[in-house]
Length: 197
Image 1 (cartoon, rainbow, N blue to C red):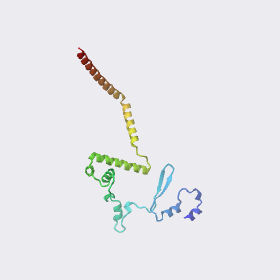
Image 2: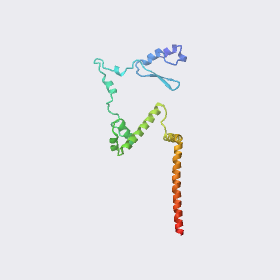
Image 3: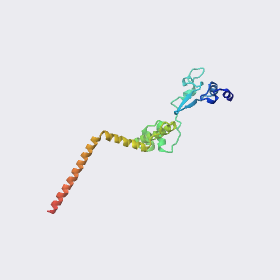
Image 4: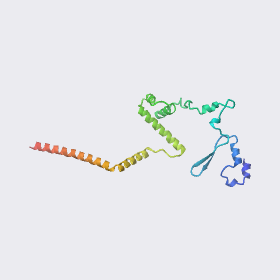
């Protein structure tokens, strides 16, 4: 391959593989060639030897090949069927996601309520999602502090939209409390007056 590249007149400014290099890379390889483009984009160049699932059939019968049926089967057993988790959250996530247990069964197995099992599973999904997002490099999952700030901002927006209603309710509460305090003072004053007579 070096001999081809040494003779090439584009050797100094080569940015993409030329046809001889592509043929050399495709020879005996089912992998995919990828090229990074500015702006965090990647272009994938598939090899000519790739096959679709529908093309994976047995030579003489025309039926789908055994390996393709196993590879694309949704009925295959869970890879976590013998996995013993150390933590409750991991165990609940594996049982719900891979083994398709109901929340009722999970709650019985872990001595928690059904709603607690649902919440623990949701927290596990969020952790897995955060890992996937981090691996994919899309964006980080929000931290608890960011979520808290977002909720505060939401309550501020609610207050801005309903400012007059909120103020009216506050005035009513304040007037009621003031009335109660005045009534207590009047009673105390009346008692003092009665005792002084």
